Length: 290
Image (cartoon, rainbow, N blue to C red; front, side, top):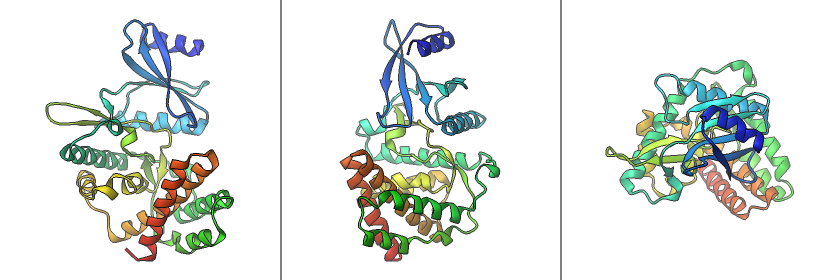
């Protein structure tokens, strides 16, 4: 990492140490950049393995820095050849590591809804993914079903295929989406006015069905406390329509299968069991017509 230490130091004009951060199975290597003299967190260095993900994360952070600036990490520098991003550290701590009060949780979810609304305003290049949304989602499901066959019964996969209705997305347009919007990617800074939210890790970001940004809230905090969903939609500016609720449940089928299969493949029992629970909940919602 000497090469990257020198690159970071040239941009921050201070001696630094790089400390490993991030998930060992992640699609990018992440390093916490600290002041070598005082150990203060200054930034994060992210080295992408996949060029398209590096390009997309860089693009969306640059667009969200435009007025009105969104509460996301400031992009300090990028390195094309190394697919590197140097991101200023957001003040605060991970929301998932603390115990915010109910009022604080609602405030954070409302701010997350406002970020989702801000993403709606970012233009996209339709040429990047010309495949219509229903066809793209059908292809996505087929791919995950093939990967899932070693761990799921044929009957369960047939049930999933029967429940999936890509036609409900007919006419849907893609919007820029974070695609991992959940408290494990929220940094909370306490202020006199209440908790201030910053959202990190746009490594999965791309144009997609915008409701994907409600998925990990629907299958997590909202399931335990439905008023948090109300707070999110208040921040977004409206509640989803009946059709959008159906779309969310369809996306949850995909999300549950993908999560369970990823966990099965990597030997992560927590992901495997959680994905199956999400899939069961989504199947119940779709088959029950709710």
